[in-house]
Image (cartoon, rainbow, N blue to C red; front, side, top):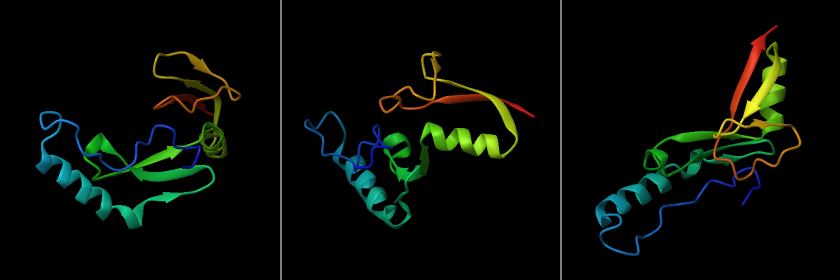
Length: 109
């Protein structure tokens, strides 16, 4: 698996207990996941993946922090600050592979 996607959990897994996830729901998620197969893409700095967030029906955009910073900078944004889910400042050199999301704050120059 590409190192950019540490939080992507892959296709739906069969529940260990019938009370965890009903079989019909699991089958729907599995069907959605396979339907999205042609749209899933992994590139060097970003990826388009489906995940459990919307029962595998939508593509989510996963980007490396450096790619997102470059994108913001190239569109005229400066003073870029990055925060993890807990609100802690994240620097360019911080390892963010275990963070499910990052929030960016930038000023239009």
